Amino acid sequence: MFGGTFDPLHIGHLRSALEVAEFMALDELRLIPSARPPHRSAPQVSASDRLAMVELAVAGLSPLCVDDRELKRDKPSYSIDTLESLRAELGADDQLFLLLGWDAFCGLPSWHRWTELLEHCHILVLQRPDADSDAPEALRNLLAARSVNDPLSLSGPGGQISFVWQTPLAVSATQIRALLADGKSIRFLVPDAVLAYIHAHGLYRAVN
Ligand code: ATP
Image (cartoon, rainbow, N blue to C red; front, side, top):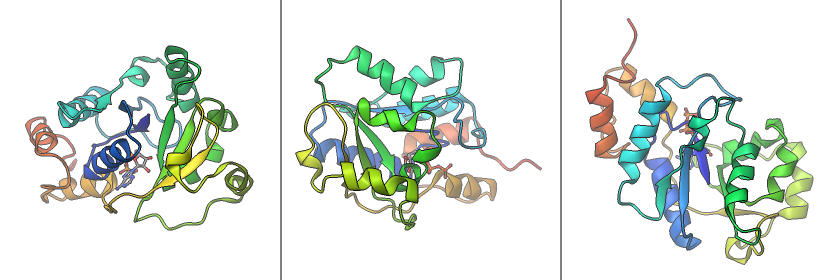
């Protein structure tokens, strides 16, 4: 599972997802847009627009697909709830991975019931070139106890942490929103279908 606000989805998300799916030979990689992220300010565009952009981007791009369960839930998007509901649909022995960019991983200690996450899945941390901070103190013991060097050696349904290399793409949704608000082009930072959707719906324009 790869969650995010996807406000909007961009090539950093897509390229990471595709490379991890291929490298790990995943049967499925679900992009899961969050409805009301508990940790950050409200997304700039509606959940339905963010979902539509993810759907356009991954159409025909198996094993990438969209999972809209967090948008159907009438409460904040806690990853532990999403994991529990996914785990309930899978067999107890199925491998499940939670994909997190380094910045998201470093924020784990503030997540709701974060210490339970590894009971349901492995965590794969994605390299993110614009984030070069050290792991916070609260994660050091966990990393020492649970991390493995080779992500391909992760075994069992969950419980371990590993790091995956991808092509570094220092793109962020913040940068894209700023470019659009400034009337600049975001061509090649998002798929063409997402670009067309943003323009057709007049999203992320500066409020004057
Ligand atoms: P914002 O700039 O609004 O914070 P974002 O670009 O970080 O947005 P999110 O939707 O918040 O995008 O991110 C979803 C997940 O994707 C997070 O785990 C994040 O770390 C990861 N991610 C985002 N951009 C990249 C990138 N360029 N490379 C690798 N991982 C990324």
